[in-house]
Length: 121
Image 1 (cartoon, rainbow, N blue to C red):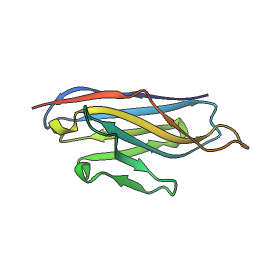
Image 2: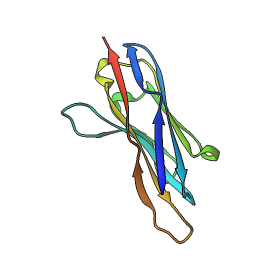
Image 3: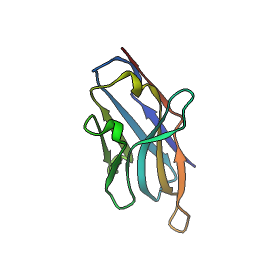
Image 4: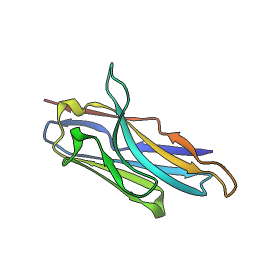
């Protein structure tokens, strides 16, 4: 089994910063793509930032220049530094990773339970 555990969410005023963390644990042979999605009430889940399988990064246009994704491969952890937060960034943020549980296994997508980020105006 593979678990993704997010932390770092909370309540912050507009213009403030938060840093989200997501640690993968369990049966892990390899981790490929890792990233962050978010879902606001009444809206579809959307990509925020992610590392692709090739190692490059993708960002939603709405967060470019404000958010930075990074990762620590030794710790199987991905981070999301969020600066200059806006009320429209309010959402539940989900971590996702493509994981190969064992050498002869398949790559599967896993999701964390989500962490709430609330930005007050």
